[in-house]
Amino acid sequence: MHTVTLLPEKKKIPVGKILCLGKNYAEHAKEFGGNVPQSPMIFLKPPTAIIENGGDIILPPLSKNVHHEVELTVLIGAAGKNIPKSDAMNYVAGYGIGLDMTMRDKQSEAKKEGSPWSIAKGFDTSAPLSPFVPKASVSDPYNLDIKLSVNGKQRQHSNTGKMIFKIDEIIAFLSLVFTLEEGDVIFTGTPEGVGQVIANDVIDAEIPGIGLLHHRVVAK
Ligand code: MG
Image (tube, rainbow, N blue to C red; front, side, top):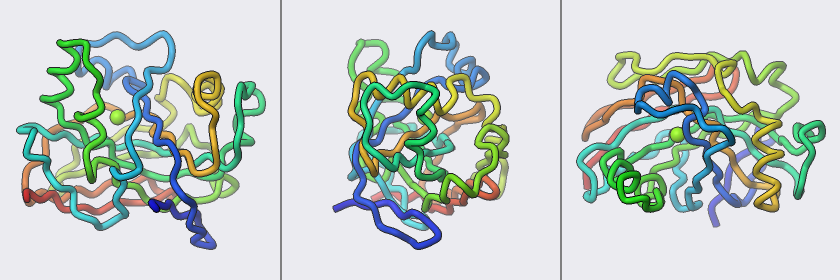
């Protein structure tokens, strides 16, 4: 059973669905020449993609171009369906930091073919995930510094205030389609600055006040 950790009690919660947003920061959407979506663009990762802070990110042999994407993550704490936006934040248990590791070459092929992104986004170790801090400890989830460096050199640095679809809108939208359950995790999208990592790179990512991640990239 794959679990996530909710601080401060370090409560272990079985992971449910991992729901991810694409193109939720305008500057990142521009990096790929894409327009900002009119409604949230959603894909999923399986629970087997999760690794804890410090675990190795294993480069899949299928890809020659694996990218880092640093994201604010949201842990759902209660079950709900058709949740109104006005009530949505009551379903949030906590916040964390995650990496949405992506086989960019396989994603590009899938986009061209109109095929799903499951392989490009859902491979083993593609979802490094910090423990979650309780919602009550975060006064404003839309004013958080978010940054990532590779081998000590900064690649991504933005603020969660720049996300296009806010957390309440995301939860309301998702719950029209999926019954949300305790243990579901939402990746809220990455800001600009995504790029390739190769074997032996070291990734450090942080949202101060929320969490940090430290991972080595390995080829096996
Ligand atoms: Mg992403």
